[in-house]
Length: 234
Image 1: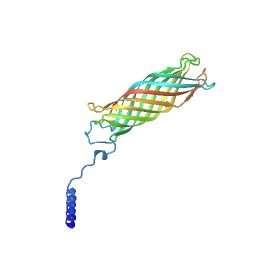
Image 2: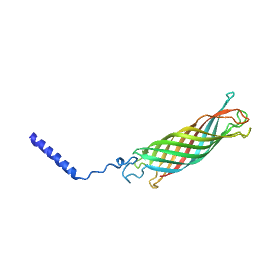
Image 3: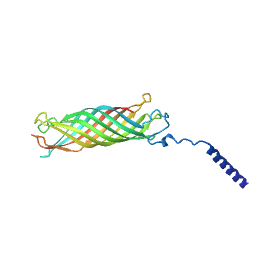
Image 4: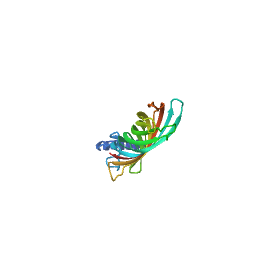
């Protein structure tokens, strides 16, 4: 009985192998046939893989900590204003996880002064903000139209200092720094190739020294925060 059972099982296995050999090989899932792809073509309304570019605009607020080198006098003041710029990048869609790189450049008008504390008005304007970042996020919803992401990278900014109520100074300083932020992006299925995002960034820059003519030498430690609305073309 055992021999008969084993013989039957062996026969079924041989028949199954022979039948499989006659069948065409099943194609590998689309995600396994190429890096940065997910799902068969047209399977999902949105596939985040690929390059993109676009424009952004919004508002920002800055914070300056100024220290007079001789005497140790310290004061702090805030700045507010707008910014507008362009961005570009590349996404790699791995399913629920999307990773990528992006860069941006912004013209800014984020201005503030110390209201004359210390005897003269020190006014600071953030004029340019640029960055190169990595980002990673998760798709949301069955159609994968939403992308919740975080981002971090290096930054470079230009700050202008002047003293409108005292000595006529006009100093421009460019400083490196870092930034970190988060955003929520939406790619509407009814408008393929477009996406909208709202994004928050915090920028932190290295302290720098100024020695304007007619004024005491001082150092400044700047930070900037921004909220922007972004339109991207994929």
